[in-house]
Length: 72
Image (cartoon, rainbow, N blue to C red; front, side, top):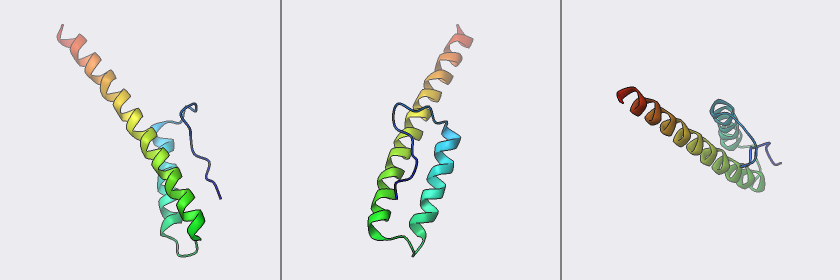
């Protein structure tokens, strides 16, 4: 039961990744999810978190660039 999660080559937005992460958390919190599926969901969640962190880093860099140009 592999969730459709973005890899580094896909262009998922931050909002899409957060929405997928929230869905994974709900599945993980379900008592009906088998152990092996839970492990796969956990791995997928880590990928989504990494993607979100990358997107936030990119946004921070863009903001810092705009802010520094505004003060020049």
